[in-house]
Image (cartoon, one colour):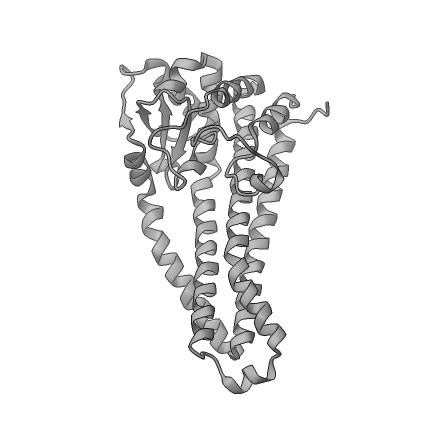
Amino acid sequence: MTTTTAYSQIEANRRKTYFLMFGFIFFTIAVAYIFSLALGFSDSAAIVLITIIFLISLLVNIGSYYYSDRLVIAMSGARPISKKDAPEFFRTVENLSIASGLPMPKVYVVDDPAPNAFATGRDPAHAAVVATTGLLERIDRLELEAVLAHELSHVKNLDIRVMTVVVVLVGVIAWLSYIFTRMLWFGGGEDRDREQGSAFFLVFALLAAILAPIAAQLIKFAISRKRELLADASAVVLTRNPEGLAGALEKISAYKYPVKNASTATAHLYIANPLGGKGFGGWLVGLFDTHPPIGERIKILRSME
């Protein structure tokens, strides 16, 4: 088995995230360019259209960005706790916050037998850490520390901010595809310029309008998976205990029932897929996962030194 360090894993996952983010931006520009050519827009008109769509997507998501923590907490059915309610849980969050140089986040518990946890908040000053009662009952102290280190790493790595940018780009792609198909249907663009284009190019652009939103979602899922691996490695740097997180993930994945209040809208926030075990898998299915396979994560953790 190849031995790696947590630091090399952090660097590799950051590099891959940057690659995906820059690739996503270029992909968005390319899609916009194809649509503008197919509709016969001039370069200046295309730039104006893209700018308007980007601003609309940004405004639509800015509310969810600032209020996402409250919304997710409400959706999960979490209740706030103090140190006397769950001393070990609360104290572990306190200690890890001090060790990582983060402000103390709000701490919540979800009454659910499924073991899982998540963090939310747009920045370290507005963060919250949530664990299910099933997690607190099923894992030991060192495993709990590792799970909470993973969640605090999401906060420190500004993953909510990263994923908000990704969601904006996904929204831009969706708006571009919608507007292109509507304008094509109702005869938008300059007919003179469109006549100069080939029917083949129009078919190509129409296929792009259908496939681009799917591709954008796949890129979003890929970035989400890289952020999970980054949080795993960051947790190891913080705790110096890869086996703690590996053991916790084994126990979490052994429970095959879903978290009651979890949904596809919040699944990416949890440390492991909260929607229950799957009876199928494979490369194609994995493209649509928000988390890397548990087995792969455990293998990477146990290869660290």
